[in-house]
Image 1 (cartoon, one colour):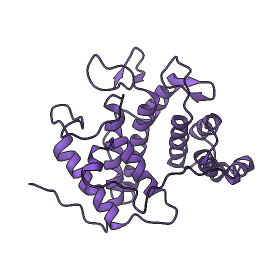
Image 2 (cartoon, rainbow, N blue to C red):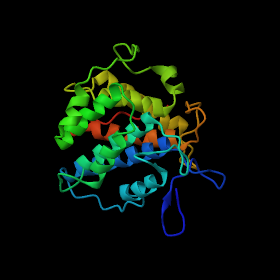
Image 3 (tube, helix red, strand yellow):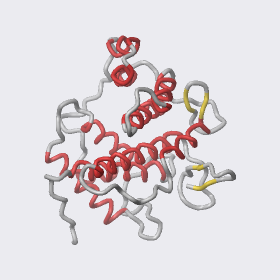
Length: 264
C-alpha cells in the first residue's frame, strides 16, 4: 500500500515499484480482512483492555480508495474503466453491511448502509442477489428487499458434497481466495456452528501456510507451492489469508484451546 499526493491510499497488487493498482476484487478482499480484524478487536473489548495499537490503514482509508473505482451505482474492475462485475459488487455490498453492523455506537442509517443499498442495484439476479436482499431487509426494513429475497431463483447445479472443504494437498493447491469463500459458506450457515473437524482442518491449513508459505523477508504468502489465483498479483490471496487468520482467532474463543504448533 502507498499514499499519493494528498495522503490518499492506493492498494497495489503486490510489493515493489512495478506493481500496479489492484483490481476491485482484491481491494474488497483487503476491506473484508480489515473488517474482520476490527471485529476481532471489538470482541476483545469485552474480554479486557481496549486495543491500543494505532491502525495505520483504517477502514475509512479503504472506503476513500474504493470511491476511485466508482462507476454509476457500482464499482468498476479498475479506476477509470467501465467493466462492472455483479459478483465483485456483491462483495462490496457484503462489506458495506458488515461495516454498518460494526459501527459503535450503532446507528439506524450510515454511509456504509447507503453504499450497500446503492451498490446492490448492479448485482445481477440470482441466489446471491436474493441473499443480499434478505440482509438488506433486516438492516433497513424496506419491503422491496423482502420481496426480492422471496422471489424464486434457480439454484446453480453445483454439488459441494457434505463437506465444502477440500483436504490435504488439493486444498493446499487451491488459491487462498477460493478457500476463504469455502470457509465463508460454513460461517454463514444459519444456526449451525462449525464442526470440530472443520475447525481442525482450518488450523492445519493455516499452520502450513505460516510455516511453509510465508516469506520471512517480505511477509508474503507465496512459498511452499501454495496455490495462487490465476492472472492475479499476490494482494488478493494475501488478504484472503489475513481474513482466514482473523476468523481462526475469532473462532478460538475462551473455551477452545489454541491449535498446537508443529515443530517438525
